Image (tube, rainbow, N blue to C red; front, side, top):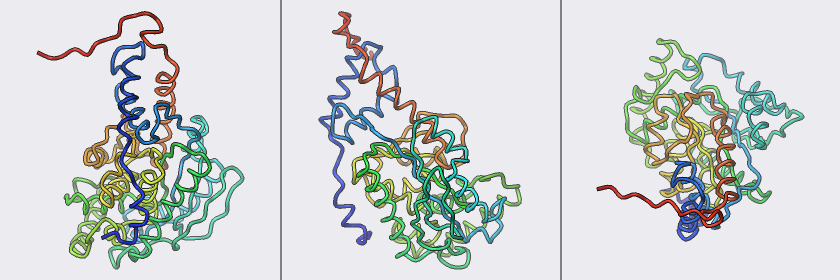
Amino acid sequence: MNRELQPYLSQIRPLDEKSMEMARLKWAKVAKPLNSLGILEECIIKIAGIRETLQPDMGKRALLILCSDNGIVEEGVTQTGQEVTAVVTENMTEGNSSVCIMAEQAKVDVFPVDMGVARDLKSGSRHTLISKKVSYGTRNFRKEPAMTREEAVKAVITGIELVEELAAKGYGLIATGEMGIGNTTTSSAVSSMILKRNPEELTGRGAGLSDEGLGRKVQVIKEAIEMYGLECQDAVDILAHVGGFDLAGLTGVFIGGAICRIPILVDGFISASAALCAERIYPGCRDYMLASHVSAEPAGKMLLDELGLTPFIQAGMCLGEGSGAVAAVPLLDMAYGVYKKMSSFQDICIEEYKPLGGS
């Protein structure tokens, strides 16, 4: 399967083990207790393997916010109406959203992308809207597949190309974000089908559903699994049947990171759903991912565990938009600053710490 993506997947190479080993040795010589920055040290080692260098300067950093509408909103699975997607997306181009303000503090450039918002959008003066609209929203997957396989593939390739474009402009770290009313429903459906888990285990209240609304959301996903489960042969099929253009595009962003050798920051539940799709399409994509935080949504930790990724923020966040991924950027900057600038034990004439073996 995935023959449509093979020209892209064939470009992926493994992490550079030599650079990673050299980065481990460098950390061991930094004049501080061994492994005292924990997961942050491992992240810098992984980035060295991704970038194939002992000095993995991340350069410019970007936030890709993929925006799209979802036909499943017709089924009453959200607290707000579909029109909110367009309003928030346009606000992002004006810099008027939570994540835009956070990104400004973290020195992250923001790129809102229209993957499939249900109406034409105006670009604001702060962040130029990138128009990659596949269609004006997906279809209601309770009645028919959300999109065709061809549309899903197009969205995945669009995500790959977005990373290629940023790589050509010198970006060395990409955070993932999304905006789309109804996309916790699509993400729950995709995750349930990929993990073969009961929707009750994975489905949360999103932006504040009542008990009745949550029950309706779970029922809609159950019906979709019964309807499409046997038809879906791979992750692209799952995205096409119950996903969204934002999810498919983000899947491509994670694949693009592996192709272009750029670390990609996983945000929350929705981003992690796309990350798992990428890993299913090409096992090994997870080596190019960093988990920023663990979402408060029920499936947040479950998806990261499946990916084998450990988050370095646990703050109970569930805002989406890339907010957790952007919040992680200063931590990576600080860790790299220590790695790059701090004196070695030899520099200050102190004996190195030695690993202590257990008895």
